Length: 202
Image (cartoon, rainbow, N blue to C red; front, side, top):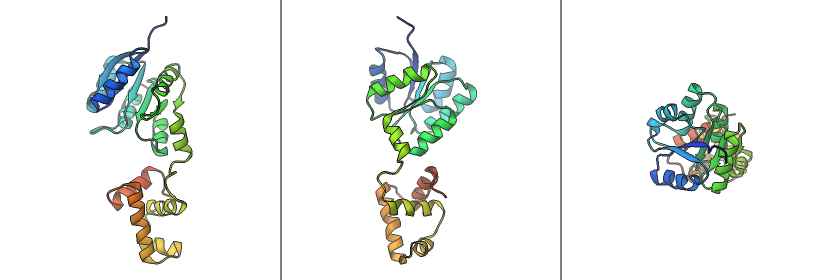
């Protein structure tokens, strides 16, 4: 039997991290579980795992921030993002940093095991759910909603949107409000940030 791969998990939710430890431990050597994202980079430097599995959304420092620091310091690091977020922008940012794997938490654990094996061997692995998110990053938006979102990303005012779409001001404002509710975002500023993060500025 060959040497077991050494895996480090970073997730601010202790129960989630321990759950993944239990699921992965029969096959892999879980050398460290870090719940404080601010301590993650130091832990990676100390442990030097074969594969680093990072959550994306964490308080204080995101998984993308940690990946950036780790890969700047150690370009050969094998990093996988394990996340609830499958948006195209996250996949694109992660791959641009040098991350080699992207797996949704909602996916079957076998996806994560496959990702760990393939990334450790020098390959890449994008889970099927994330591949579909990259191909169609906004499946929940209608063509008109996507058009409105792109205009927001371009910085257009409601009046400018109304003029471009040849609709009245009240209808344009309705579209803006409705889009905010569809996206589940708290403010127009948050919608603008979403548009920018998803590359909808052209």
